[in-house]
Image (tube, rainbow, N blue to C red; front, side, top):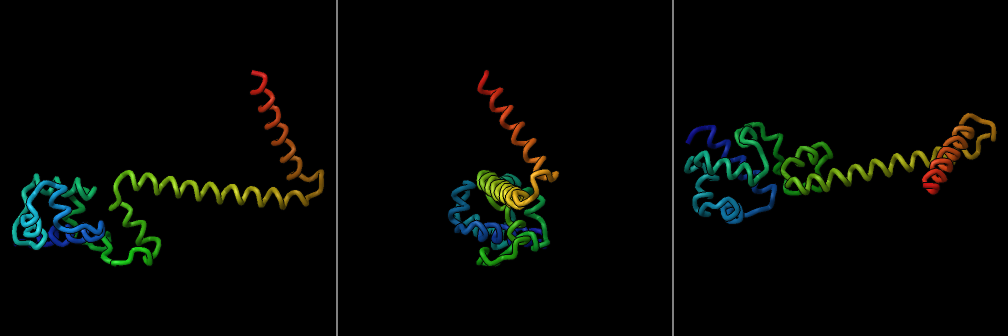
Length: 156
């Protein structure tokens, strides 16, 4: 078996382990016998191009990622909860597209929450400012704009 196919076999094992799947589950999902998948993953046989395509589609990776010898992209740590943030971010590509979308929405919500909290903190801090301060005047203008827009919307 060539060095390249050994890299493919190792990477397939790592991608499968990161998804916490058995060889049988992967084999059933891509439509090949479990024994055949085991021989591919153990570097005994070379998979056909169509089998490689099925595997990359299943794992949600590019063909190039399957042939990468740099294992830093794939983390084999069995406890991903305790990984540093950067290592977790590297693993996001292993998730299904729906999982990636849901996770990105959660991140957006957390960032929006933080920005809102900071704005409210600044607003509360500015409440202690003198009534003729630039901060207070800016808040009054924003409030008037909001009231005007609300009244305009109600009139329609």
